Image (cartoon, rainbow, N blue to C red; front, side):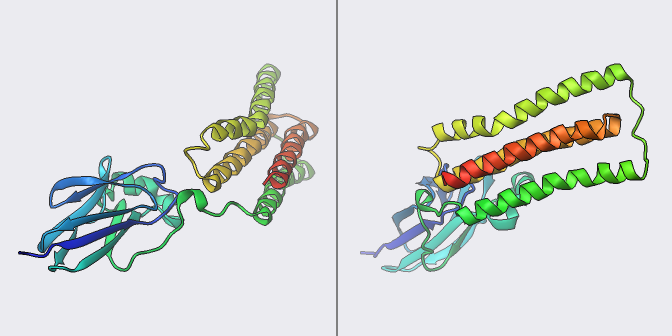
Length: 252
């Protein structure tokens, strides 16, 4: 009687695809699915085998291995979109589709389940708040320098400028309430999303929307609004950004 080989597949935890399962394809057949932080055990016959993972139209490298009778084989797998590589997501999705995931042989990599990942520390939240305030204040430098150098803004008709200012005020108000809208939306998804990812997305999208009024205000300044009116957009974003950052710091 031929002894079978135990195959143990372990998926490491990462933010990418943390809510989705990978399909296990062994010797051309789908054998099951594996989620973040899970292990998948299966007995296979001795001999040469091929295994890879797939998700949608993307997959991992094809791993060829030899199973010896009575032995135990340990494999690890995960997403390639970790660390700085997440910036290359579109390349992995459309060009490097066979490298979107990875699988390799080796001792089991121990990683924390998605819901037990560490949350953003208060120190980091404070750093992000300070960076946001400095970034927002930097938008005051250029207008002041232009005013001192008497560099005139572009010529725009008063009617067009009035319309642009009205749109700017509307977008500013929308931008200032979006962080709380996003937080409320993500809180409803809290049962499906680990807390660390929820906090990261909340802070990221919150600060992105809070900086948008400043960008629009600077655009209006180049179109002819006075420097004092630009300060409305900068001041509103800074005040609400401090409120937003303090709220997350206190409740973190």
